[in-house]
Figure: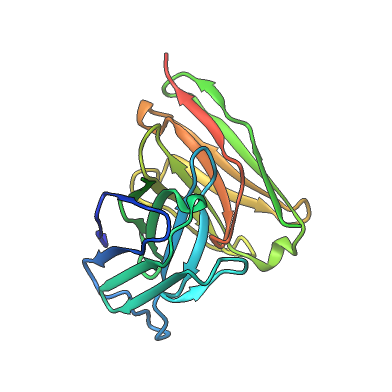
Amino acid sequence: DVVMTQTPPSLSVAIGQSVSISCKSSQSLVASDKNTYLNWLLQSPGRSPKRLIYQVSKLDSGVPDRFSGSGSEKDFTLKISRVEAEDLGVYYCLQGTHLPLTFGSGTKLEIK
Amino acid sequence: EVQLVESGGGLVQPGRSLKLSCVASGFTFNNYWMTWIRQAPGKGLEWVASITNTGGSTYYPDSVKGRFTISRDNAKSTLYLQMNSLRSEDTATYYCTRDWDYWGQGVMVTVSS
């Protein structure tokens, strides 16, 4: 199974600061079709998860461009520029290249 | 508007069965793969099962393979998860998701005697 190592486990940031979350996979996430199926999800408190980014860097509709994804092969990063109060929650990376599909353990973002 | 509404959860004894449903609306159901995800209380997300848009292929992790069955009725725009031989470790909120971009509100399953 592909292990997704997500760091840090938690972050506490002030409004307006920028943060980065790392996700490293135990295998390359480049699929046979040359796409890389790495997603970033946010689960706000008491809510269902919501996808923010797919295929490493593509923003879902309605997601502010303060969010950005980057990386390749086995090393990926989610960056949030100018954090807002609504960004609090738990962020997960998810790989969709290899079965079984696997998630990172989550990063809890708190607002100072 | 895309909507996914799960139902069928509840309290069940170990070893018994339960069937979850997820009714979809607002999109062409038979164009999309569908997936079940679960989240144990206070824990992270775990993939449970996926099914292709036609229902022709299904996929499971080892933790549920042979006990859970994902299926769909495209005429009814409904996704199912048949869960047999339930264990305490299956206790979780179960979510259905359309290709990860839309999620239901979740349904709680508690396995306990």
